[in-house]
Image (cartoon, rainbow, N blue to C red; front, side, top):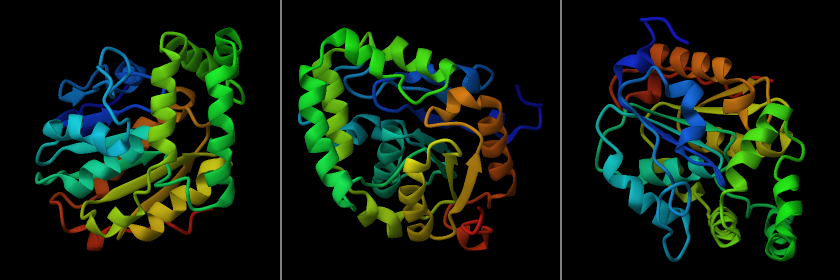
Length: 253
């Protein structure tokens, strides 16, 4: 997928998937990256669940994986976990990339009320209907990916992931992020754009980019996402803590 000059091939990278998926969802982006790690979040894939199911507890499990000069990439719920990791780690990662992720859903009334109304539906819907709805609003390829993983996940674990995302507020960590940060959203999922821009505004020097695709951007546009991350690493400062020289693209349309 990438040339021999791709900086992703030369660095350690940690790819954190979104709710309902597993680490294998990154396969198209990481198959040629020998130093990439794609762990399963607690309660996903082959990983044991944790109690309580919170972003903070998810981060506890992944914290030992974070190393100096590592690129940490998170999609959706995985972006929340990435933010928590970068605020807490004693290591000095090279960069953070947040894909289709928001720091909180609690900043607006719909974000506070919507999940409370949706949770009973998630708990009571027939499983066949729940699996069918998991691909709603996605491209056909992304819908197949979502259904593939969600159909293999228990209802309780799905609710755990849902609860972790709806109760998290990572805005308090913005000032603690001292590495170059790229925030990427899909053009077809405007629901994340406002929250993603909160991260751009709150994290010093963060860049913002819109790519063609929806919420499952790593499936809809894996090549474009890989190129964007690689280009970002090529221009970002090499050493953590020097992102005051990073160009800020928050004014992109």
